Length: 145
Image 1 (cartoon, rainbow, N blue to C red):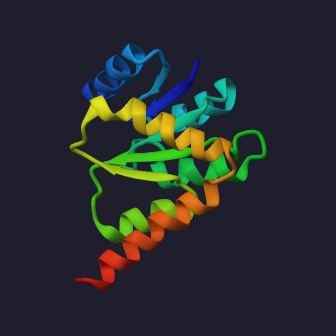
Image 2: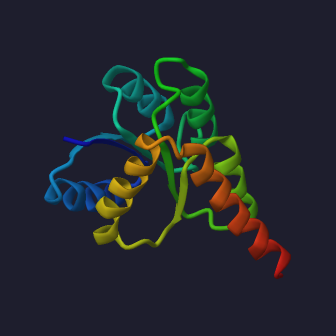
């Protein structure tokens, strides 16, 4: 069973994700701030972390950096799920080491399929190419402006 950690200070967003992911047979853990999210990731070792950027106590950027620098959690894929929609924020999330950047509002019904697809690619050893593809798309968007 895929274990997903949702780190978001917005309880309705956590609930929306939980309901849709559990309906797809995934186990869901939750944290309402960055410090708790970091602690839960380290203790539960989820298969993937859905991470907001704007969090109390420890922002999502710092949570991601701490997770990726820790040998115990460094391989856990991070999907940013945030209202910060600017291209520079998306690029920062991917450059830090996230494998996906989803902006709010989002379609929660598509979340489980997206997670399965991302985990499948990561498990096939495509983490780096996945991030490079997404960064390239962002660069193309930026050049088109």
